[in-house]
Length: 152
Image (tube, rainbow, N blue to C red; front, side, top):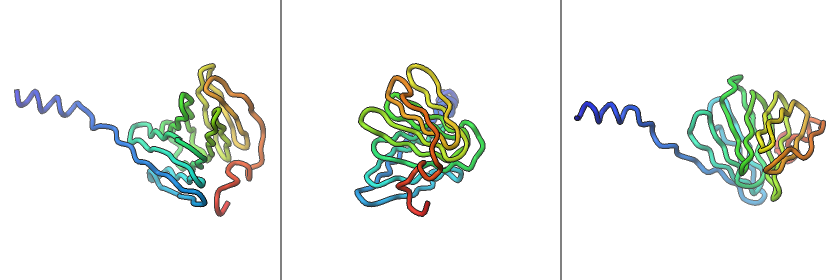
């Protein structure tokens, strides 16, 4: 019986825990969430970081910039409500708005998963979305990826 319970506890994974990172008005914050992933939060922004595989970050409010140095495709997923953004080794920002959000890519690519399908966003592109679909997709200058970011 003891051996059975020991084996059972071996197979049960540890619970997923989440860390909250947030900023107040007029403040920015840069956090190294893993050795390969840095995030920078804009003023009055909040995210939760879950220690799962792949790493899951939920944007609760505001803007966040991601700098991912690893080329591993399964390193990071960002959730904004029902929308899931999958990183493909890149630098990008995500903005949350009351009616959805937007993703702007500085380098690499991201996939946006919405109810109507999956959309690929490349470097120097921005895509706006609501919970159901991508509502706009256009070229931008690199400076427009995260214009609020300090020391850009």
